[in-house]
Length: 281
Ligand code: AMP
Ligand code: MN
Ligand code: MN
Ligand code: MN
Image (cartoon, rainbow, N blue to C red):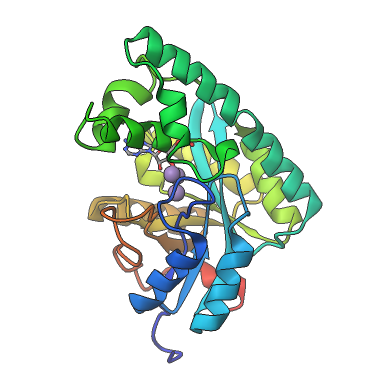
């Protein structure tokens, strides 16, 4: 790759190690086939897919960056922090991820009961069939099961009617604190990144408060460009990156087709320092 050209990196993607549809190896193969120069695999609260993905990336000749997407709760709002470029064997990070993951199965049992009370029985058993790792059971797996049995045409509709706050199948969960997630990532030598900021339903004042807190706790980057973002989000969060002095990250948030595919996001504005500068590229 030439020094004057931005490398084509996708720094946000999921595999069967959390709620993606493809194995870690298959995600890397697809990244290669789509002409990317590098990939970070960022499964929810898990680093279980990284070794397999790294090995495949070496065989395919593309760059690989360790990643994870940690679920946190900030002022009662669930938010996501991506970690990049950390040591995946760091005991503090592993303990933190384990603690974050631990309640998932229990939450899933309560979701099952809640959906049963709303007239849809057997969803936990069904959702587990979609999860490669039961401990990583996610709302996505419930959504896929409800699509499978024909209740809804697509997962988005399931979320809208059953899996979001105020709806019958929604069970709140106590995730990590923002300070913890950033602390684990940094202790393991990584960079903390705000994931898809355009997705959070908070006011712009709250967003500024969040970004200030994130920076004060040691957060260094923000996903300016995401598969979840409209062009106006990219412009808005580019401005926030400049205002807060953040590095800029980019990623599709790929979960498997027919979603947004790997490499599908708006290019970063050229004046922003890209996060891969902190990662040795
Ligand atoms: P969980 O970590 O179990 O709370 O599940 C969150 C996951 O559900 C996210 O990582 C997304 O993959 C997926 N998700 C959240 N909201 C939606 C939505 N509106 N439509 C489709 N998938 C969603
Ligand atoms: Mn997901
Ligand atoms: Mn996310
Ligand atoms: Mn994600």
